[in-house]
Picture (cartoon, one colour):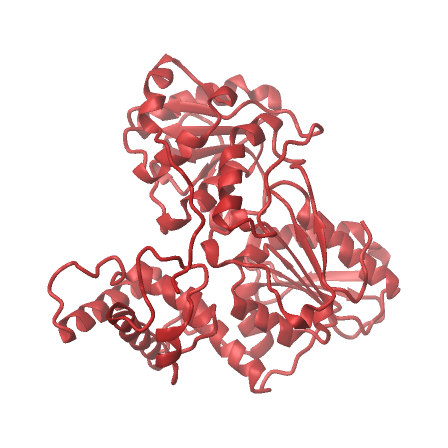
Length: 491
């Protein structure tokens, strides 16, 4: 794949198509064209900590080991954030900097954390603010509860106040009239309406409390970085910036990148809107005149995902393309004939997690022919992990927010675990089901979340294995028909 060195590059493609590998190839091209110049400064960033470690490993493997020194930041001994440096021979500065995006405010602008981030604390603060706003406005019923709840206010702050660069100070009228791109019209929040004014009161109080009481917030720190770049307090500029998993970036995030690079045409982004579990349909490929000469690289086919899994989830992939209004950043998943071997997705039913665990062991033992060593449960399900671990199988469990962009050999989707943000159910389910490089097990129980029934109903039945007669008898009752609609923004 050839790249123009001074041309913004957008790399898009479905899960498992090799977007991250293409990024490393671009880095190699830049470095070798400059003959490992000691003046070169490249920033590589993503929201995924584990992926950042992988990118460092891949970059290290593809460059000439005799021409660089690699090191992690000294103050991160456990490599939690995996921030690292490549320093070329003879250089007195870092030439390739790998940083988790949430680390940019501290590493680049010196904006320090004010404590450990705690969502529960934010939830309590937002609940208290909502109570005050409701009391002040004489609201004593649940008529506005679909907007006056902590989850909605938090996402509105992230995706609109910060993400769309609306801001808080002096921004009341701007917020009341802004088109909330990607936020849709359900729940309704019409321009200049009483409902939008109620939300504004909550947002303003939330911002002031975070600022005055120095409450730890990733979003607030990004706002401080954004402001520091805009007012010239931070003057750091990189020659090239490469962003993996761009679907996690808001407009404000991209504005930060534009202000950190010497030439906006030297920005490269890679991602897949269908995996936008952070932002949902507010995620977009930036269309900015500063990226005037951008070129697209569309990668077809999933090289990692077994063919039968790609076929089973094809309708879900198509629905996500439709949901994003056929945006060029959302692509259909296409089976690749050279994909690794793997079974059809395996659906298994148990009344509860205790009953489903031994069946998962049966499946794991049966498919050990695929050289399986460990099970990964998504979303985080400690009880199921404990049950499986007690059956002498290595087992881990985590959030898809931490593992997306990575591959796992045997993935169990635990459908009993609720979603934090149900509006992104398609993005979450798609991203979970595309993490495997071999086996996908879909565990359903009597506690399977209702929101997943529309996903289960869209799976290609002919491309599924229903593990036993009990599962065959129960599966249809967990499915429902659903017609996906494009998200329409409210004028």
